[in-house]
Length: 214
Image 1 (spheres, rainbow, N blue to C red):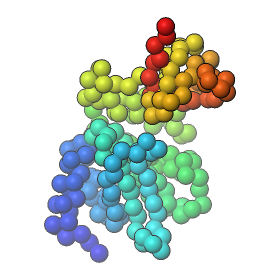
Image 2: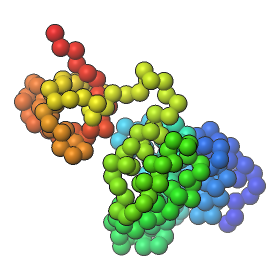
Image 3: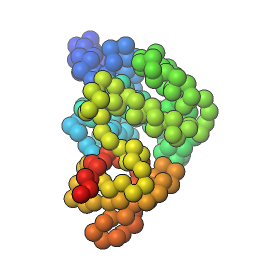
Image 4: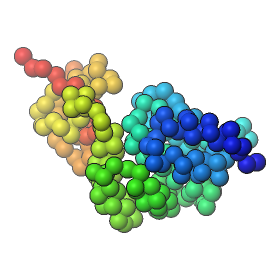
């Protein structure tokens, strides 16, 4: 059933609180066309958004996105989840969640919405979408740029990648444990917990608190 004008107006009003103004009309059209149920959530440390395909308990497409994101990063997460939806429509459950089929959908959406992102992000989008499979480090750089847009310098989190071997730190979301950096391994760091001497690998994008040493 087509959405009425009042429902579309409410949807646009909601999107205007979270997404870039230039993207609202296109997002709204996509949401209405696919009959998507949109939910804006509070902060979730485990994820920025998710897509749920139709099921007996909810016979419709459903997307949730965290409401504490910058508008530009909110749009990026929304496109990520819309790509899951479009992949499901085309392939049902026969492909991998982030396989080449999803990557093509995500690439096409990023290019469709390229002009909705700030100028400093557009060269990264161009590099990221140049080929399949999508280039991981460029995608992480794009994520980081859009997450921090508009944030004062002092408010930007320190990431594990900002440290060097020998640095002592705590994870910002789990500060009870203290680690020391040992060596970089591609996108992760090999670290040792100081109390237990257990070796672990931690994502270089993890926000950290530098431990002051006496």
